[in-house]
Length: 237
Image (cartoon, rainbow, N blue to C red; front, side):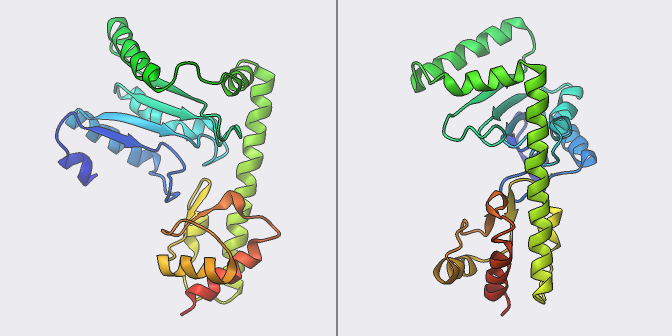
């Protein structure tokens, strides 16, 4: 909030509407409304990076709440959506860029600028991934099935969060691991130091980013106890 208030007017802000990467900590609905209000006060431009819609709560509509709040408050909005995680299309570079404009004239101008940028980046991108996405989203039955499967993925990650925390507490760790289950989405910001992460690599062959971010999608029923034991060993002193 300090950054929003202190930034020059008409600043450009990149926001994660849900399942914040890397922390897994999202603002509440009330906090999003206050953020939106402060954006209006300073005339800032909100640009949403939406890579995990559905992976925070399992509900696509609920995870889009922040964007809808800004829309209701009358902001012009930019939104970059990625389908890599939520549709399992890693490496296909499939997404959707949306810009809310004042009127048709502005929309045409923005579109022409975006076309120039895209043209400089690629001439004819692969169409397979985008066809998969458009087919699923364009068919009510397929879309409903996909939404069910997203919920299955999210529920499994939530169970793994609970299992990891439970296992750490069962080992007698004196540290507080509530943040594992309080956070949402694919990643857990564990709080481990770079030195502890390095020890995990050297002694246990467990890999994560040096800031301690764990990919919860890689935690399973067969490795969660091993992971918990390793984390306990490097964090017990």
